[in-house]
Image (cartoon, rainbow, N blue to C red; front, side, top):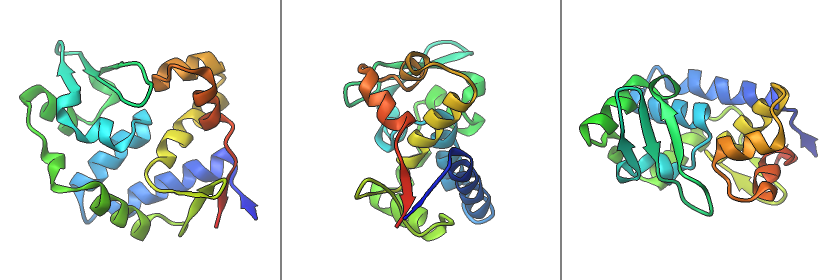
Length: 165
């Protein structure tokens, strides 16, 4: 079994973003926001989860035992930020199934697993947790960034062993 280092995982994520950018800007935009924030698919997809607060801040009402997250304009792509500001959702073009089909087609490694469960776009959440840890953030700081209510949930992302299936 081949386990991925945080650096390898990040490189695979970046390769995926490079692969999809030439043919689908919308898919690239969505995936870039997942890469940058670690948000779950539905948290990003449902524009009703978002609230435009000021020209510099928007709030995401998260799900699954998570706290809401506040983002600055610079943390999200300009395209998505404008969608939230205008209450318009260009991401509706893709369903979860369609998004994962593209993800599985263009991600550079066929399947990445956490334990016995294959991961698709959710691995962006694992990736951001691991990258923040490498940058010296504490587990509690990463928990807060991810919006997780429970430290153990955040640690599942930080310390998960991902392997190629």
